Length: 255
Ligand SMILES: NC(=O)c1ccc[n+]([C@@H]2O[C@H](COP(=O)([O-])OP(=O)(O)OC[C@H]3O[C@@H](n4cnc5c(N)ncnc54)[C@H](O)[C@@H]3O)[C@@H](O)[C@H]2O)c1
Image (cartoon, rainbow, N blue to C red; front, side, top):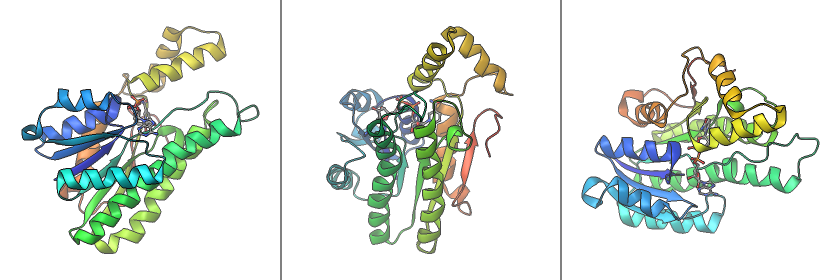
């Protein structure tokens, strides 16, 4: 299996990449952060399945096209694209939010997912071998939350992009699904808790405990929890699953 993972430098994207490599796939890593080179080196050599990497912005169409060419050269084809690159964006309320900040969140989270899905779909259509696209949406794209207007809107868009592309690409054997993580223990989530604490005049620890109280399974999720579902969606075990957004949230209700 030849896999491209965006947002692969750290957090959930790194865990997804590690999972695919562990399962015997070959992976190409994409991230805006130049530390993607270090992550690739830590995950292994070409013999271990790390086919290559590129520091590239998912929101910039020419950069995505160039990165996709590089991925193709390294992998020899693309069977799976995982769109994991994302940003949390401003924690300010919509009433006071700068339009440029709102646009940037949509550009990275939604347009970036579209651009890499498009690049992957084009390649898969040319190969005529089918394939899978897995997008990382969010619990906050399933229910509104204070301070999450831009982020939630962008992630809800990811879920509907997923459904539409699943319908368009299904006849070609290309499945498109999304995973909507809940509270996953990464820097992005800790940043969100710091922002909540600053808004509410509470402490980080108080916000952490409050979040745990909302999770029926009683713990934060891990990148590995998300990676397991992504790996399943990319596999033949999910051969009859497309157009879905699957919550990985410890039981917190989405819509
Ligand atoms: N952590 C959570 O609780 C949680 C919950 C729901 C959804 N998510 C989603 O999971 C994904 C991964 O999040 P994470 O928690 O691992 O956060 P993270 O910040 O650790 O990872 C995000 C990665 O995306 C990269 N990135 C950001 N902008 C980019 C761009 N323009 N081009 C290319 N790469 C870019 C970052 O450099 C980073 O490596 C994101 O899409 C996020 O929205 C996370």
